[in-house]
Length: 405
Length: 85
Image (tube, rainbow over all chains, first blue to last red; front, side, top):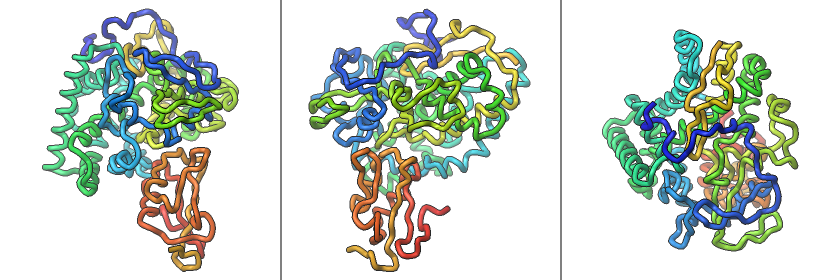
């Protein structure tokens, strides 16, 4: 296995890790002070209502995290730290950039892709069954599905999977790669984004890049740098977290949650309900480098009875809020097919609510439902303690996952 | 101008179960929608009651809501204007 496309880089260890659905969260309580790995003080916000406030209150923003006076929040900056990305601008500027792509990601726009996504899923399951049992479900299913979907949406027909994995792993690296390696990979990735933009300007298509370029040209205020960052950001965000969630959902569903597999196969509505619960209760990563979704206060703000001074870094711990016992009771298995008791914050909330939330939901529910229907006897062939994890990244998911049927 | 009595007046409804408080509507149409103290959108002024003029900003807000939580109705006729069913 080459380190080029698997984030198992140096310094990240090989000790067994617990599956993400077993991760313990901060006990929800009032905002409390802690420190980021950089030493920067951070207010940890963990209660469901407080997390919502942090994410929706306009007195907290992303842009102030990258202001000249801002304290460092990342030891080795990655793609999330690019100050010109959609994630790191606020207010009207953010809205103008987001508008260039928003229409493509509304629930109705995404629903139009459903039959096509289902056909991709069926084709992948056909190939998996042709390959025969046992197999690695990451290579065969959880990785290629979201890559195929984002490639089609963005018209990236010739995108090489290995290059994409290399860029994505560097884009979301915490400790897997050096700052130099991340810088080099991001420069190459930006070159790829610029080339896609140039190509689509010369030869417009029916894809998301073409439509966002048209919207940006109409707007007139969006810089070339912002466009390149947006395009490569969509490529990474468009597949990485879906792959991660699907992989971790299968670790749960083929292990501790095995008794739910049959019901997942029964109908799409059950799979849709389970998808919401899995998104809620199975975090994307360990949160050891990033204790939550970061914001910075632009003035004094009272949150959960605590006055947080202007200029403070605040982390909205969505993992803790998503299991806050004030709001969510019962364990994942008993609640798996129940509607959510309250909104979950895996996709965030407020202005930076995940653009691809509806696409991710649709891919996940179809992927789980169809797989359970076609392979009712699917099971893990290795104990959870032996899973080879992708390490040193903001997200954690299996590097490979051996299954049989 | 309010058009509460006009034939073209509109009201906007917010599906608060869907709203994720993106605030995009409050930026596009500050005269029609605002974020409440709970972080979710709500109609302001006549837009929640008798209806008022359909502005470009409001049409855009409905169009660009990331979760399709906004619906426009005719204030007088009660029928749905946007988004299409």
